[in-house]
Length: 300
Image 1: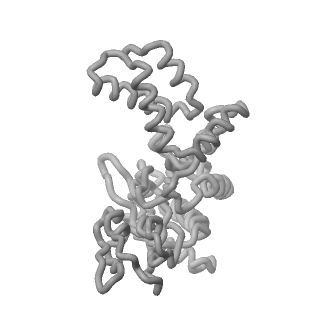
Image 2: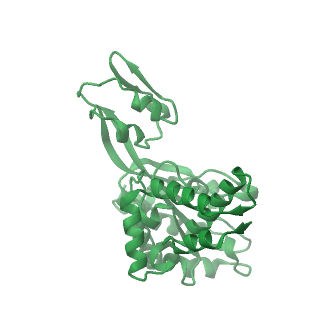
Image 3: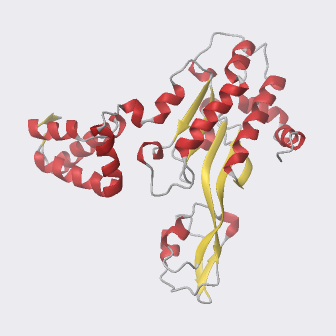
């Protein structure tokens, strides 16, 4: 689609990562089509700017502007680039919270990502997988650790070798409920009802996303536990499967002994005479060796 020169200059001046900038371009072109135009004008660009600035909020916009004024590059703004730029047979994925945070954040994906990289280097997973490889290495040869800030799981962590997302388990306190129904309307899984003057949560189906806690105006709902859900053995493609849940709501420090256990399982069980995958290993052994490793290490 064609662009007015002034509209294109506005896009170029928006101080965001190129990934987000490309989405902004697509949104502006969508608005132009909606307005039955074959060119993006200042009108569409003004609306796009307002839409995105409203979504980011003034605090994030200030951070973005400061970063660009300081001359920070995309690599500075996106920690995932730095985490994955060196030769390695592991990949660390972070959700979009990695840029300037997210209102739904339950864990700090930037900080956890740095610690995961340090642990994977310490465990020498690249050398282990390379030595076991029976054919030339390709992108699918990598071991992926996927980290999302909340239960929306924007990185599809459940389909990766190790998947992690933030959690916040709600509890009903003794604070009187205003019966505003904000929790009922916010819950995407529709598992909250108002009974006898207060919220009732069907915990069997709760995704522990913390949304109900975030919108409760009275404090009737608060977090009883915050941490992360941890899954292993997921994959996509021909043999797609969800990872098996190790912990539904664990402390984030539990991630690192689990990584140790997973690498130990690769050492012991990874096939060397044919192409293997961590999901296949987990299917063969189950998750009990991981818990056995944690028990022996005193980290269960």
